[in-house]
Image (cartoon, rainbow, N blue to C red; front, side, top):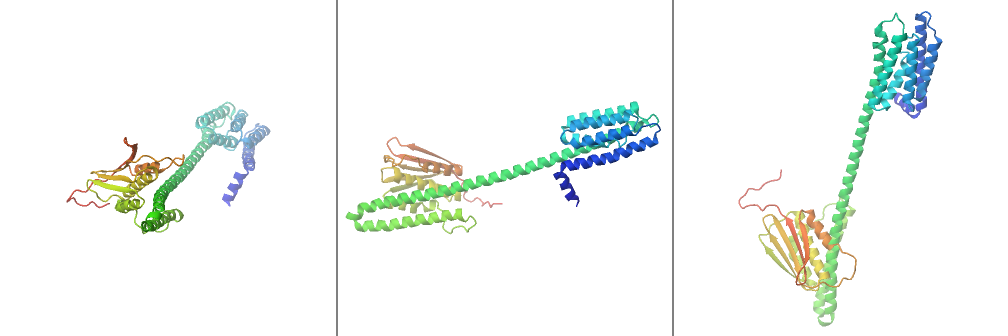
Length: 400
């Protein structure tokens, strides 16, 4: 019931102000009449008229708080000058005006208005108030009654400011969560796009090279051409399986993880054999002591080699390439080189192969460098950070 009335007053502020003005008039009118009865020779009609003016001004307290405060202050001073004692009943309109000013005006301005209004009311009471009344009723009591609504208004203003600050923090936190979620979605889409690019580009390049080889061998060596057709089928089937596994992550993010092993350097021999079927012979050289790599670095190293060799089949006029893996205590350097001249570009549109390789290297804290070889050819060099190699005999450190 109380909540319903509060909501009704919030929805109808003019009606609320009218009710408040009527309540103040109900308090100020009887207060004036009681003082007239208790004091001989004090007229009643000026006090009632002043109460009506002061209470009627409260109708505009939300839109003109300063003007309403001035009118109610003058009304209270006039009461004191006419000989009325400034009691809480007569000061009710001024108290409402002080509450409104301290609630809606800046603190420094509000405190200045409160001080001036209080001083004016006390001065009026001292100059024209009843001589027989104690001094404390003319000074201390009005000051206390006028400072009370000012304190309540300041407290309410601080409470509203606190609620607004909490609401702002909540909105900022929600916005931050949304931005973080959007950033993670963008990163996931970029990761899936890189995977799709690597899978499609690699297998289509192999399939294209194998198909061209089959076309050349059909007349002179049908048996070898038939063997390459079987390998072409295996290449396209592998492409379809990898694409299906990658797209499934985008369609059903809560699905169970695929059972196929994640590509890594352990599958590097099979990758080189696949390129050999397309006519690209790859020499693999390993320097240093190879060791198991973290999953993220292992996958990105494999994909970088895959993309670099794919670019060789598409853009270099050569049938040979070299892959060198150089292991140190804390880094793995991958170098993919070829000595063939570049083929003429079939399209002016820029590709994303080198960009994707560079992003993969940077995603694990490494960096990638590409350069044209002085005697022709192209080189892709990637440095990836590795965790320190375990020393022989050192105890295993379990994760906490």
